[in-house]
Length: 314
Ligand SMILES: NC(=O)c1ccc[n+]([C@@H]2O[C@H](COP(=O)([O-])OP(=O)(O)OC[C@H]3O[C@@H](n4cnc5c(N)ncnc54)[C@H](OP(=O)(O)O)[C@@H]3O)[C@@H](O)[C@H]2O)c1
Picture 1 (spheres, rainbow, N blue to C red):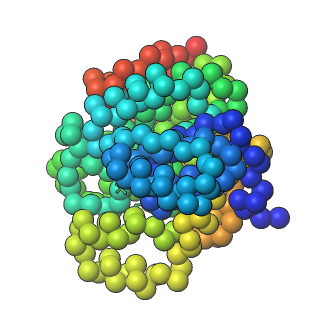
Picture 2 (cartoon, rainbow, N blue to C red):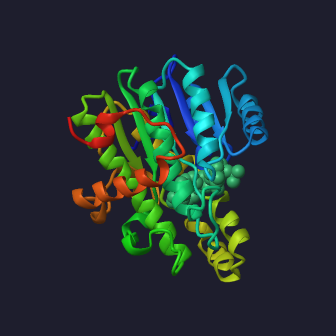
């Protein structure tokens, strides 16, 4: 039997926070959760985008519980302020979906000077997740789902030039950030377990889904070859709601477990199923190294109080 949104259990009383919720997979995930009764906090780059997304969701679920949060993942100080506000406003959090992402732009940097794909896709999600753990751990059955990509399987961590400062390849940097997503998800799960925190961390990837990711990528890098490739590949792409199913399954299906990854049945498309994590993410030493390097980059900009999870030891 295939898993689809009809199989989703009711989510009344649960609170979900989704980054990048105004577009593509984030929006589809928000819609599905709102329809099942969850309170969904839309994390978007600006308040205006979040409010527009809220309005659109309300046309589909007029009694939906939808809240907004402006959060710019290209600025860790902004992330820190936004999450501090969230922690002061909400008593608990059931689901965190680390979904926002950028793909293959020319080399630019975040407000703190970090290469933009590493910053938005990985570092800011690590920072906000660690800041939200106190809220998540108040709720039995809370989950963190980090959205990766099939690019994880080609990803390589360039330890000598993590941010492409010496030589930048925008696709290698994207794949690296998406491998980092899975390494983070897995390492977080192990640290949560050894800290006895009842929060599970999983990853998911959508295959190929028709969203704004491709057009925004082409807009930023100006490559007509890539624009043409997306046009030719268009029939292979599935809808954003199909693409959102792996992350929804990982977030709410009772059978899904921490440390697992869900993706489409046929690699690029199809209904979701348990899928393999990139082999490069399975090396514990590499995961610890990435955790430590990432933490050293974010620690001066965010306030994280969770010593067990940080040290990885009880
Ligand atoms: N679509 C696919 O085929 C595919 C395949 C593999 C993996 N993925 C992954 O799926 C996730 C969702 O992407 P999508 O396909 O739904 O693309 P999308 O439609 O472009 O959505 C990406 C979201 O991320 C947000 N975002 C980008 N930079 C941000 C920043 N600095 N601060 C806050 N939010 C920011 C975007 O906000 P704006 O609207 O303001 O730009 C948007 O809401 C990404 O992690 C992507 O890597 C997608």
